[in-house]
Length: 411
Image 1 (tube, rainbow, N blue to C red):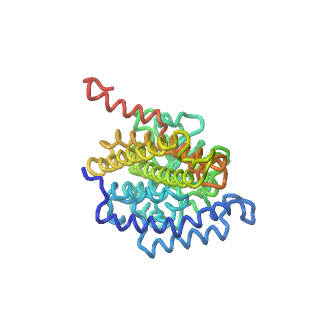
Image 2 (image 1 turned 180 degrees about the horizontal axis):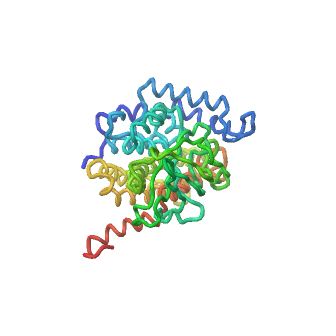
Image 3 (image 1 turned 90 degrees about the vertical axis):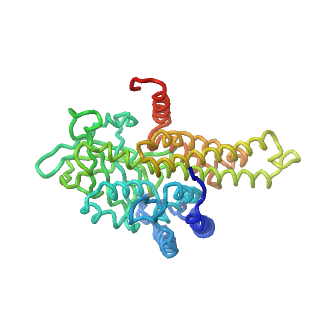
């Protein structure tokens, strides 16, 4: 099991790290400071300056050949393994807008995976090319307000066949990216046959984001913030008509598509969280060495040596687990990798949240203010403990896999 940095990816890591530090990080704060400054007053409309920042950085990334690293096992991709890409995702996680600059941002990477692996040629022609070029954004439309969506088999949002179309009705929420005016694609999970077997009731659809009948009810707030201009929207579908040819893979195969999509995305999220933990540890150390209290440097007070040491060890352990999950995906496939993916999905956000919390403490009241990135980072990794499945669901999967080793009956 080789989890190390390969000769192929080593120069890419250096290039990505350099671009994140020198080109992207200095503009990240300015980008976010522009939110709400559009002449219309709409927080979800990009200002000219925001578009200049994004488009300029994306052009630079393309010119340097630093684009679409994430797509494995495809001639459209960069040719990297999941293990190799994980190291790049860690670097991108250190700055808010970095992943989009390299066209490696959620939820677009997962949605492009769906189109590449399960979509028809017509689907690819309509949406995939523009997504791969970074011309449009996309959203994954799955969770529902009136259902415990951690058990996706319960989803009740309906799609009813009428001739050559399906008619979609219901509400969805926490639809990340749907607030972005550049969002051009929705991938929607809907129940098509309530009488079918548990995991054959749902179907995945692709559709234009501006299809008539879709209403944006509100942006959901994350710890009091609307996360503009990206947003996590609450949507209502009223008699939305989607052509039959927009079904992905086949009716009743929605869970198959969802699992294929979520596996890689969970690893990407976790490696970016590890990148945030690395950034927080760096900030903690620099702050502790630069500030004094009670006649000593902050690092020499209380248990700060232990806190810094534990942060380093926990980051290293989480990284190794994430790399093993990536290796399992590369060598065994998504299904066999699932217990490992579930493990890292619990471990990485918890670890990152703990390290960021300690860095906030080292910064005093400034650590929870707008003067540092730490508060934003903490809310992101805390939210990640819900995204792509809450901790309890992943622990359940890990325990079930473990128990199967010791019992003959299905657990």
